[in-house]
Length: 193
Image (cartoon, rainbow, N blue to C red; front, side, top):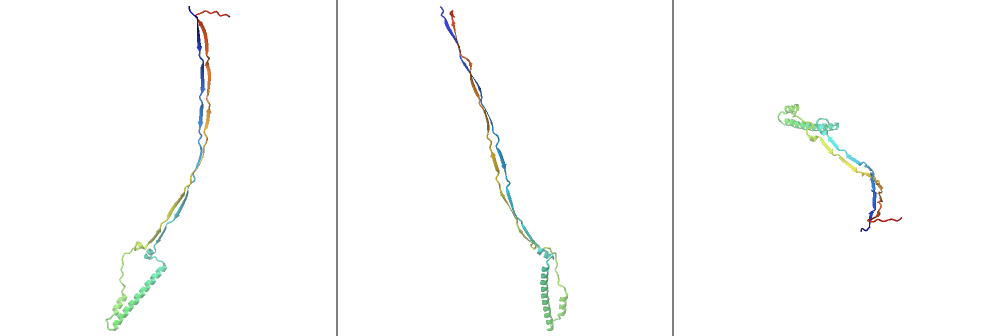
């Protein structure tokens, strides 16, 4: 004989998760920056060079002399010529005295000395006769640069980052309900209503 049996069938509940991920948007604006560079203070200190050239001796050798110097030189030459003439006359006077003492006839000799020009030497000359006739005096100049450096002026204003956050969401719901069902197998059962 076959006994009746109960057959049980079940379905399990199923949960589902629906989620939206969070998003973060970040923006970093550039900092506001100003830079100012003042020019350096530059100071120049210059002392001029001095050059002094004295050509008076070279000009004198060429015959270009100041009047005062010409007068002084001619006065000196006149004095020398006067002394030479005095010495010559004294010498010739002594010769004439020798004539009185019975010496030779000195008059023709004295006349010959007085009538002849002295022998003059000549040669090529250079003007100026030497480089030392021109005197050069040079004082070098000076040049200094003084620089005062000015530091740059930098102003920075930082900007805060801009952050936008969208929160995500998570939704949990029942996708399938649980169920249980019973059935009887192998017997006829009358159900009374």
